[in-house]
Length: 262
Ligand code: OOG
Ligand code: MG
Image (tube, rainbow, N blue to C red; front, top):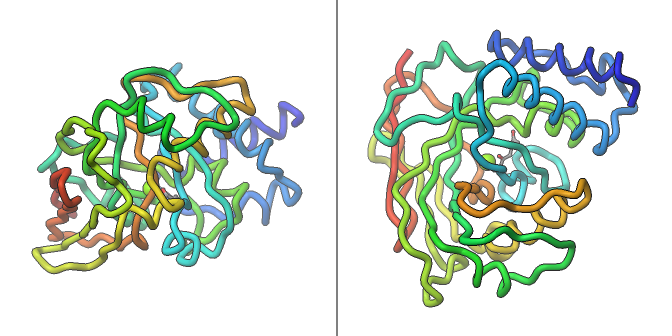
């Protein structure tokens, strides 16, 4: 992709991210023909700039990996983005709506690998052998596009709506722990608002890591050991309002939460 156009797309998305305002889709304005590969170039350049400005990359995230999410967003394929240090919210912490546009929360299962994983055709069993820890997570997504509507290239260029994440305490991953059958519940002020099983994520949250490794391999990258990777929303995302106390509990893994203020 031509650098001038790429930089224009990066600047447009970055202003929306930093200024917390919604924009029209890139595919509706600057670049109707934006491809998935070009969108990842935009995502990468934007992240590179953020890192140059003092932020740091924490871990990749998978998105659009469950039927509930695909249906909610009206798109068809898994995508990845990256969580950065500035997005992290301490468990039990407070997030301020003023720092977002139209934030939503979604329950996710997180994993930490004990060794790097690379390749186009890993199996869930190979991933399972490499998983060291698992943790309950809440991703706060906040599409920079109006109405939270986008095409796949648009959402990739916007770092897959990544805006915040609460990463709960991790537990050791043991072979007996079948993530497919773990029930995830998202509660707001004590009331259950969304629930689903781990298997909603590509049949197995570990398949999400297989998919991530495959996508990263296309640009010669690997899934790194030690990073807290989130595998994708298990349920549809739930809009946040001031006064919400949000909690996610993943069966056998644990719970985490945060509070929403104006
Ligand atoms: C895109 C991000 C999707 C997930 O877990 O499915 C995502 C969006 O829904 O805005 O993070
Ligand atoms: Mg997510």
